Image (cartoon, rainbow, N blue to C red; front, top):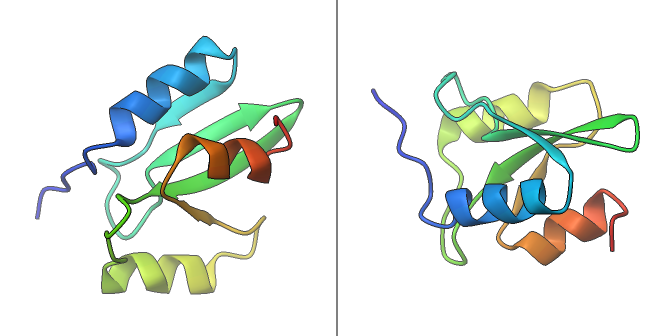
Length: 88
């Protein structure tokens, strides 16, 4: 199954990059992998981007539950991401 990026993802990516934050789009990896890998001030963050009413798919929930690194943020806005990574 081909993954479709949430409608707000590209706008968020563009805004993060405009702020000088490194962004690698992972949304095509599959297997529940989060949409974005963000690098900021020497740290990496996994971000799952959702629209305001978007819901996690079962594989995404499974990935987040089983991931042993930093918490995965499920973000619905740029402000949520900036707060999570300490860029606000």
